[in-house]
Length: 571
Image (cartoon, rainbow, N blue to C red; front, side, top):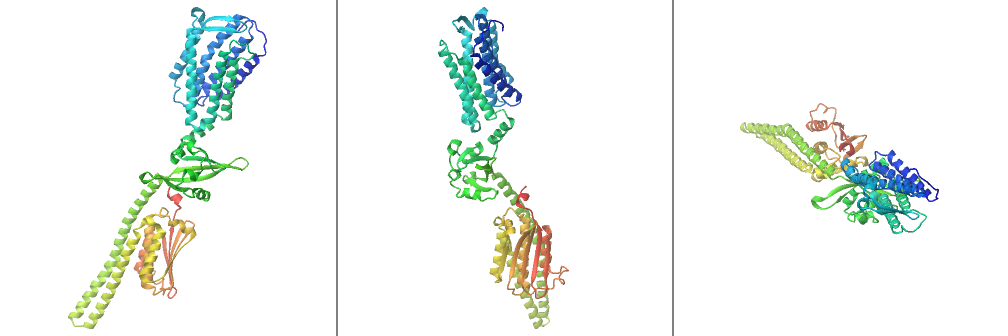
């Protein structure tokens, strides 16, 4: 803008401020794909032009040139405020409010203001008069007051949006606090300029207000990387993640938590801050010690009561800086209620399937075993009847004795079968507990001591969710049949051992006694009914059965079955 200019030192503050604001605008424009970056760059552009207008007006020597620069400032002031409001809305509510229609409506008063400013000489709605007494003084017109009111309404709107974001989003609290301080501080300095307009001061209050706001915004932008897409994404993920996340300081007190954790703990951030985990969950004693000794395995707890109870898997991890110093700990809380319910449903379905298979197997056993015994009884009864008819009473008595002996053994077998069925109908207690009941029942009924050995590596098999019910039932049946064979054929052994081991994904189940034994080679043709049934059961679950025995050396029945880890099995 042509005219007479004079050098004054006060212009440097406005020039430096314009350069700083321009750098902020360039930073925003280079990240224009991030929500809020474009309106920030536009706002910095208009503020930079505003500061250049202040510089030109201060350096101008004649009145007409000062009026020209004041008019230039009038063209960029309202667009600067509007663009800043758009930035705040885009930052607080990405993609929600800034549609093209809304942006057009927000900037429409700026277009009207520009037209009225450029045509002010014909209507004087913006400035009614000018005066010069060392500084340029203006008398506002009616439209100017309306547009000023609109600008203040935009400032109030953006301030309220930032206040709401400050209250509702702890993750945004510090950068929002800086922007609020910059906005409110700039407004306060601008009001001071209005109050002390008549004083001759070496500093332009408007320049100071704009610089103060730019510095605070810059600190928020660079200090908290507001326009870094990775930081924004990380913040959104933490805030929206369904898992609860609680950050503890080095003293074990809550420093921060996300909304999911607040819902799980039924406590707001204000209520939780400064409290320990034990204070937040008083119904879970020794929880901190359990988490510390978990060796990276999650600790499960239940919260709530009745039908509203939910299960959560908790994992505690240290937070260390680049030097390896522990600054705090991070607690992750994952809701596993639905996972447990799904596992329960699957387990129930597997038990139902196992029950059906067991009924089929039981029918086969009854057909092959009980029917043969009944046929033998019938044959012996008919023979006894014939002997009596022909007067061979001695032969009839011997036959009836054999019949009574077989009937007694059949009664014992049926009683044992019914007892075994009752034992296996307790799936919720797990495989190991069922084995304990089977061995204890056998020892109690027969007076033969049984030792149950479960290796440390096989302890996981005691988890009801580890071993498929079909596999568990068949293995228990094999143990019961092997123990029945001990009762029937081993004499009176002094030692019976049931051993469970886990090696390289293979489960080994062994039933061993030091009884009379038998010639295993002679029985390898499958004539021994009990051994054949045990072999069929092992094959059904993908395993294999081996029998080792010799006369006078006892008997060892081994079953090998492939198993999977709980983690693999649950997937």
